[in-house]
Length: 174
Image (tube, rainbow, N blue to C red; front, side):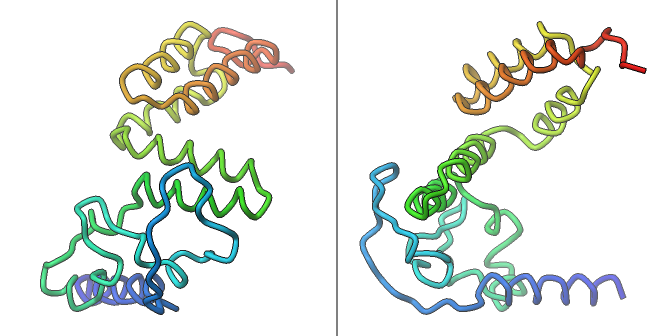
């Protein structure tokens, strides 16, 4: 039963991912040059040629048959920084700079191990960290992972937490 459920889940995932793929081929835009427009959305349908997985598998290789044969695995379905950058370009072209910035922050996060992301998430919860710990986290993000946008976000959070008395040791308002 569990295996059947997993196969059904994988089949549905593959169907959703592949929905609307039409094989249009264009030259890949360079990151940050604004080469994509709102008409390129959704990329899976309009620009599948740009999408590759972390291990280099092309979008059209992400099929149920390849999953079942073992030719592709879970890792091949993970989003890449480049795919997120393309999505950010589309968001900017559509007039959504805040969405573009969030997508670029997400692209930076792909370089951080999952366990560390979860630890950082917990440390960012109110009353879990003091300001020095948050600033050290920001430095780690910037220096170890080259995640400048994420580091800026954590520094801003540290300042906001300080103003709102949400740091470790601050008493919650009654």
